[in-house]
Length: 194
Image 1: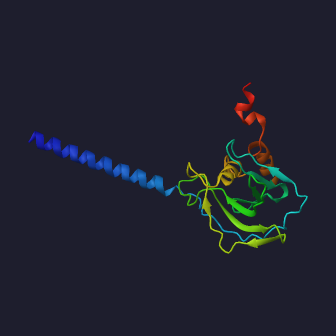
Image 2: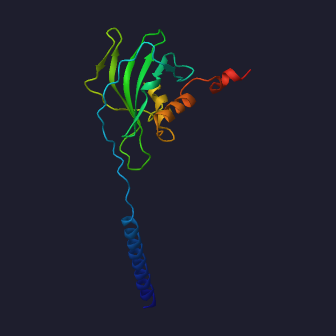
Image 3: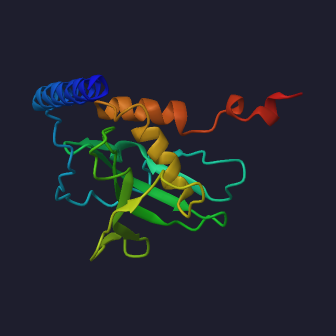
């Protein structure tokens, strides 16, 4: 009888604690409302074709990267949908121009974020006729989500534009580009180890 009474007390104690926990959890969850972080597409207009005397900034990707990427200084603009538009010349090691108008989105750090950092190429330059050729489809491609990459320039730009959050103004973006995206001798330890 005593054993049976002990069991009944234990079972009732467990039931009361489970109901109390459920009531607390329900009350806690009702107060949490996370912001909607879905990405909003924007229609972008093509910029003017880059002038021959445009100010191109040399980008530094890595010591082993053979290309000579450049970004047009006045073309970098922050957009209202947490993305950046810019004109990039992904010049080959043989000085062949590959100019494109690109848009890079920066993900918002959230557990509910439905997208990663990514880029899309909206138009390509026809360097012979000096005009833009608009891409019929400009799909988003993720960057920064894998160790091996086929897009080292965009990976580097993703670190410049998106790490530590997207800058608030075009001027801040250019400043961050000077600090993080351009080659300086102090960035390469092999050059400083004399």
